Length: 231
Picture 1 (tube, helix red, strand yellow):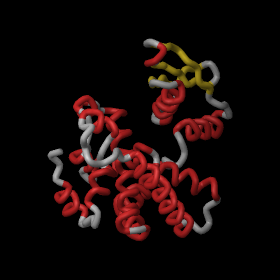
Picture 2 (cartoon, rainbow, N blue to C red; picture 1 turned 30 degrees about the vertical axis):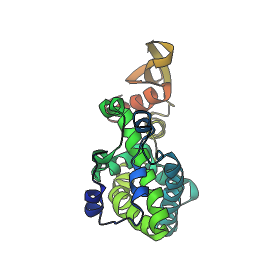
Picture 3 (spheres, rainbow, N blue to C red; picture 1 turned 45 degrees about the vertical axis):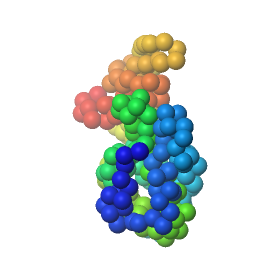
Picture 4 (cartoon, rainbow, N blue to C red; picture 1 turned 90 degrees about the vertical axis):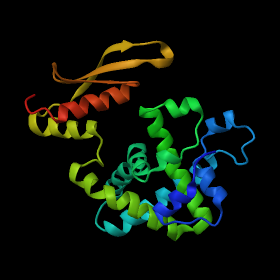
């Protein structure tokens, strides 16, 4: 292992009493496959704990900040705050990518796979921080490095609502028609399907989206439809 976690502690100004907890937070399961004699376990149990702490902190924050918002509204905002994209972005901004303990194969993976690993590591770090320093330290870390940096963007861009919901609202408001999603093409073997989906208003194709699941392709189609001016 060639990672110097002291550098990360200095960068974050967070110094662990139990250094093993910090190291374990960055240890992906794949690393142990190539290093079976490594002295620590992988980070999945810490991730499980950190996920619960993250949800509690963000829920408490939203409950206190938005006294007049209904449960459904706060649920949408919380989902946008703690989804894998948001926490992976926070993880990357904190430099966590440089400290990941991965197999050689996982080291080469980028894109969606790396995003997932970064998101899981963010949660595992919170789990480790909770065990080492308690709830208040986690609360400070999460609010400073995730909530404060993301909340304004979520509210301004309405990221608390998914693109499909937003496009449906827009279509119903402007032309009184509910959009319809249709699979236009399926590509690839069964274990690695790729879908192209079109979003239609009436019989008019507004936009196409592509993804590894029908839902992902639908969301991408809706995102493209939202930025089109004439439909």
